[in-house]
Amino acid sequence: MTRVAVTALALSALAGCAGHQQSAIDPAGPQAGKIDTLWWSFFWLLGIIFIIVMVVTLLTLTRRHRGIEQEPLEGTHQPSEETDSRLRRVVTGATVITIVILFVLIVASVGTGKAIADLAFKKDPLTIQVTGIQWWWQIQYVNSDASKTLVTANEMHIPVGRPVQILGQSQDVIHSFWVPNLHGKRDLIPSRTTTEWIEADTPGIYRGQCAEFCGLQHAHMSLWVIAEPEDKFDAWMNAQLEPAANPSDPHTQRGQQVFLSNGCVMCHQIRGTTAAGQNAPDLTHFGSRRGIAANTVPNTKGNLAGWIVDPQSTKPGNHMATIAVNSTNLQPLVDYLESLK
Ligand SMILES: [Cu+2]
Image 1 (tube, helix red, strand yellow):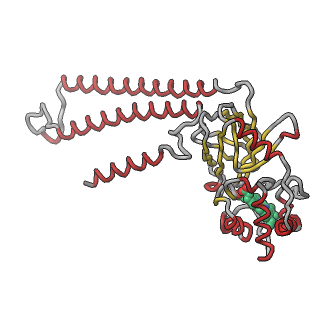
Image 2 (cartoon, helix red, strand yellow):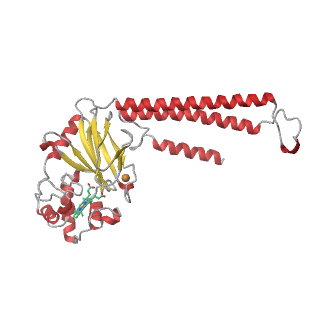
Image 3 (cartoon, rainbow, N blue to C red):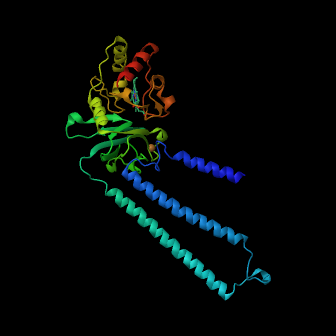
């Protein structure tokens, strides 16, 4: 009975992995597709071997000992010549098969790595620089035309069907960029640039997560990758390239004033205003994003107010300063930031 329950539990846990927004076995692009194929071939091959080993072990345990007519004296038992050479053949055979299987796995693994590497350097790529910073992601769209260079945070949009070159960097410790539906992990290492190519075949929203322990809030360092058709992507890009909209009503104008007259400007940038801080997520189009603080909480007015009043309770240890904003100023500030679509 317990065995049935355990199996059912294990199966439902496995089923829970499939079709998720963050899953390596639900590939949405060619790189992740190859990793997925490799994963399943390992799974089936090793699964079958596991079952064979278990069956042989059970048979051995339950089978009556043959060839021992009587209890050996003083606990010693010399197997017969024939048994001895049979055992030798079985052990040698099993060792050879194991080595051959390991080689097959190595060849499959290296072959997959090579096939993935061959997907790089396609023409007309989009280049995105991703910088890991404790504990959020800076995302910069590189363009030879400086007016088309875009800096944003914690949310990346990519056009479906177009190869994307991710240039990974870090500003402090080693992080790792990992969006399982699109590709494997790639470390972001201080003072060097690593490269990873991704390409989404299907529109969708895929979750990424820092995959190298980088300190207290490592687990709350996530990002969204939004893969959308080329025209939607272009519309998003054009909107993001615009400076922040100027508030039109007195309430949000007051919110903007609160932002600009407080320490927020030391760290944050809002293009189109005097706020030009470079140590924290760019807030020019903050209202268009899905989450707050590297998606620790969803982007709602309530969560934003909580974040501004006491960022340390939402994400303990994070590097945002707590600035006293009095209650009459808080609502205008929240409404202003949320109006930055
Ligand atoms: Cu991390």
